[in-house]
Length: 431
Image (cartoon, rainbow, N blue to C red):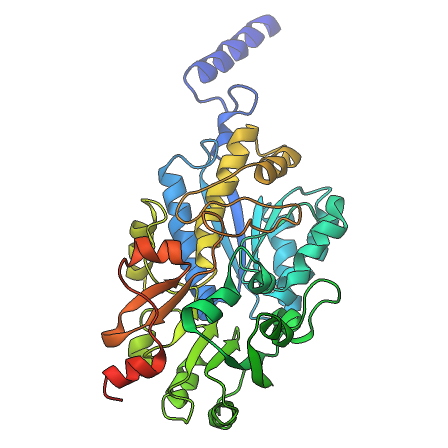
């Protein structure tokens, strides 16, 4: 009797396996193969950059799933709002790694990303994962990787470093000297964690931004540190104009650029060239409408201009616009990073060997929607087109938004166009 029951059970198991109803086929099993690869995103969702990065990740994950997912497994995004409060970011990171088992977690902000890196370093040994930092520009952030690789090797920055302005491959100073023709600078720097290097320098590594302009032959005739919540810019602008400066350089992250430019256009500084690096709204093409056209002549880092990096660039930006969002500096990293991780995992052949995945990212070059991504020993993006470029656009007559830097990309994006000084644009417009 027992033998007959055993035979029936054996036949039944064979039937399930042959018809595909068995829970496991092969070494991993169908059940495992159908489990999603989870990606976490810790964002300040009420901010323009947080909302646009979220929309970007939604688009890229949808595209990856349509392309077969990662190793045949679907990809799922789990979003947490840190509201720019570090304790919330830390709690969200623990949840995403420990409870949700996210393989990749995106973080935002210098303070939030740094705190999450500390948590991640303690979790990595039992929960191997990756952390990609968006909207995190403090130079010291990737010192973590450089100073203690084994502890922080899971961290990569996919965003601009505030010290990029010192990078000779990006030619930031050449933009002022050769493109604008700057002689005297009014330098404004927003006080925040990201701006510590421009304000204070880094002994033996970077001068202050004031010193850097002067080392490059330009005179800083006015300098001030601003509050990100500032709303009354007229006194600052009047002092800048009175200083005799011909160019305003404003390094910022959270400043209300709409209010700033409306006041600039009515101030004694209105004929001065102005470079914003980089406001929360001023990179948008719709900034022209937001300011009622008062941003004529304004230049902005990370402009919302369709640059033909790859055949995926324009379709993606159209999807983003349809979703109701404009371009911000974190978008290329948010769009391309899941593709980078997909390629690294599939080359490793498994999600289980995170050490191999990290090595694949370190040793590879990747391109999907934007420039070529490659990472140095600090896990910083390699800089200078065809790698990570410093993009600067200018608003010209009738709201035309053209790329003016770097020159090689400007030639293929808007051939025949070039930077025009603010006073000349205003004169032509009868202002």
